[in-house]
Image 1 (cartoon, rainbow, N blue to C red):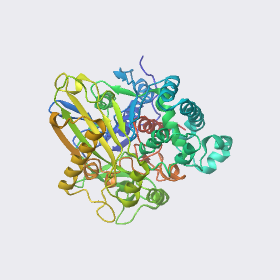
Image 2: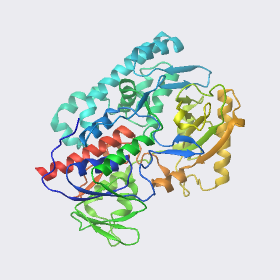
Image 3: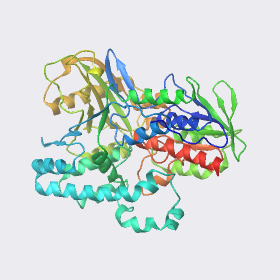
Image 4: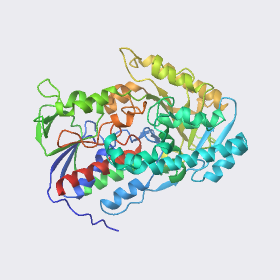
Length: 513
């Protein structure tokens, strides 16, 4: 079916800074409505952190490695033309969790009843019942927060109060309670609390400091599923890019934007590296919020005052954690090393991990290890080969007052240490099967994506006011908008896609009113 969305009453010249998924989706939506849109991307490819990296025939999803809420992208394609087959593959189990005491839990996909049964069998009937009750509460949290906090530009606290609904929902959302405290009262088994704690890391945060409403992530995964895209999540980027170009979007690669031009009341244009100035009616930023508000908005050495409050909010947030990753290609074997697409090995002391990252700012001694190992023939060079994308949480690159990731020897040794830990936890020495090996540090993330210190998600969700301090979709500076992981509603493919829809609709509403 073809979309017949109405074109806006007036066409604007719009510059999008950054060709991440948020930038691509908002550009395609606006071009479909009749606007003249150009994306300026500093690197030589599109997609931002959503990328499938290929080394000697092995494919690695090095950014997002899981898609949930696929309806966000089905809706995007329908509303910008025709629907597209995303070639989704459901993952069952959704996750394979391993604990330091030797216990294990395979969490099924798309079924609470099966999840409760698996938990009851693994950890006891009480644990299963508690999980079911917790996910029921998570479902109510999602219904209470979805419209106002996810699918729309974030309103101010006074606006929420005037709507009245938020007062009724306070007891459901539990805004003054941290995720950790919330689950400690409801889950008697520490292993289940570890699983919920890990959802805080989806936003680069500390479960002891994030609001309890992040429990909704567990419900979203359960209700809307865990999905792989055949051939890697980079295929999604290819399809979104193709749609943007079909709609008439111009994409200029290797074109870093250094400055956003404005007259202190409204945006007037951008400056590219090398000094080229381009006049536009609106600018949509898909870049790291710290760099946007502390650098790109400067005029004659001074910062733009319309965005002073936004800059202050961004600078008051705690930057999200980063990640250290290993890309390993294994030569063929008769038996797969790992049975699930997503495998997590928890340490004995999860709190120690967050202390080392956020307080001591050092690489984690005994980290939680996440592995994405797709059973996808399109992502290995030959039958029986395996690709392991291994990720551990890590402190940002912060040479002054933190950890300096610039020493390649230190990073290489840390990567070897992670492999040693993994060999011990799996119980199989697979090192003689490694034919591809590459590591990526927080400094690499900073250099590749422009995120301050390699923070994967921009501002973290630490603190009860964190959501209100993210970059707003609509800035107080007329003509400036924000999409992507640094902006509302947050990081991850579904939320980034929603940010593109929110901004496109905001621009259309301003033109057509």
